Image (cartoon, rainbow, N blue to C red; front, side, top):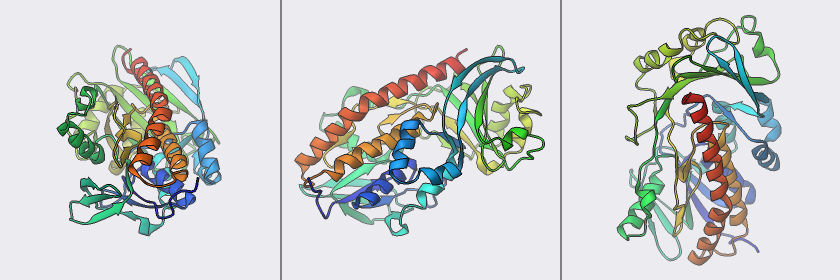
Length: 379
């Protein structure tokens, strides 16, 4: 079937999920516009692992070769004790610095198709279109909205408010995100490869250090550009359910000192002290992450559909969050290309097909990530 020639899509969220969705629509010749709440796009996180199936998607988009130049293949994950004793190993593949990937994808979006500083406060529908209103009173009109705005999605909140008012929101979707673990992630400034010879390797491996008689662990990963990514974290008995946001930099340095103190005596598998890596990390490249998770039952309503963390927030292990978001985008894009007309009935059909195709796979990915997190942190 030929898609509707004048189809217009509004994407809410300019993170990895929204950018990949935009690139796919761009290549399909479908009109779109990305609205990003932040006034300046600034990716959080340090590194990202992409699954082989996702690399196949990137290859189909013609992006793989350029991405490979920015990344190192990941051989696997080695789990070690705090004193350096090897405890086990897991094979793995493909890794990138997260900021590099975000900037790479952003460069593929025409500037006129992405607007920052747009906080969405209302989404209204008519029989033939949808109108998105932002806090600055600007409006954007399209045939459908894709909510790619993360775990604390404004798109999801607006959708759920309407469903709840009509008594149509499942009880499970009314419950907030759950988290009981937190971590601090960082990426060092360029390091001396003479001090850390592993930086000269063409591939990389994650080292996971487990603390003795404590639940704190540390992850260390060599990246391109002579940098290393690291993560220190574990369970926090004071954390329960969502309190308004999962990430931030405004708590530094007290929280960094407190959390990282637990790994002060860990032996660095790449030489020197783990504190050398932490102290070689600029403040702006440190983030606190609450490891939220939740699988939502309701992924769409009317002319609005969710993707990525907005509908399945997965704890960040094995790159499942980003990988599942990219697979969401591929599924949605393929369905939209075949859309004969943007009628409410047709949208409902393709949205349900999208859910039928993606929900179970996302759930399995979420479960496997949770099991690995419990294995590492709940020793």
